[in-house]
Amino acid sequence: MNERLTTRSDYAMRLERVFRWLADHLDDTLDLTRLAEVAAMSPYHFHRIYRAIQGETAADTVRRLRLHRAAVELITGELPVTRIARRAGYASQEAFTRAFKAAYGVPPARYRASFVPSPTPTRTEDAMDTTMTYQATIRETPTLRVAALAHHGDYLNIGNTFERLAAIAGGQGLFGAGTRSFGIYYDDPASTPREALRSDACVTLPDGKTPSGELQLREIRGGRYAVTLHVGPYAELHFPYTWLYGTWLPTSGEEPADAPSIEEYLNDAHIVPPSELRTEIWLPLR
Image (tube, rainbow, N blue to C red):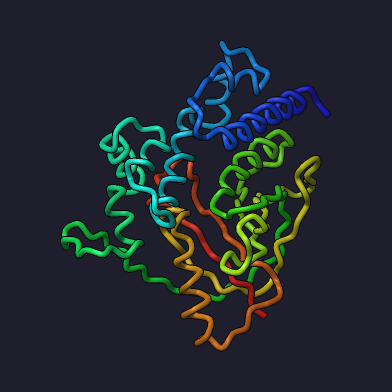
């Protein structure tokens, strides 16, 4: 292995430790000196290295992960918005509202009201339009070789595993022109305990490359898939699944194949706001 690749791999392993630490300490006050210690880097240079490699600051990473968690809590939980704001690291609900609206397009109260039935009527102007129209196309795809990093537990937390995957795969020189990002989901979250859910965060492999270490070589099955596109936050991905399995499949004349569901992530959560994220859901067909 040449010296350049060795250095890149070394930096990748250090940043992977940082992502793992951040995921486990999301409620802690961000301490760049502590992160530099985790990365075994000089605190004078850690921040510049992190930003150069990740394309965002450590504070940007934490803010993005906290806002994603806040969106999930607004949809699925019963915590008051003020409590969610504090958990997201905002001293006031007003500051949280501004940040959430900038990322998700609507204030948090309106976002929650769109998914959680309210015992009292809301004014029309306060309602968020959540009418989502999906279409499915049947696509034939070749087998895809991917580098996979296993994720265990809540699917909505797989973003942390993708951060680690990017660091490790970058260190192994696995990224190339046209690299694609996928998630493989093996269990139904409606019938499997959250802590028992299994999934893989994946990136496609360049020709001739094979992953090593924590990364496993996987294949995404070639064949027929029913594919639908969701535009919006990852926290809302249950909507296309419900439509695909509950509305489209029973009237399609198709049967699902004995293979897991696939998600392909068409743009980068580091670059676009959650409201503009584009995700394809692939339902394998016989």
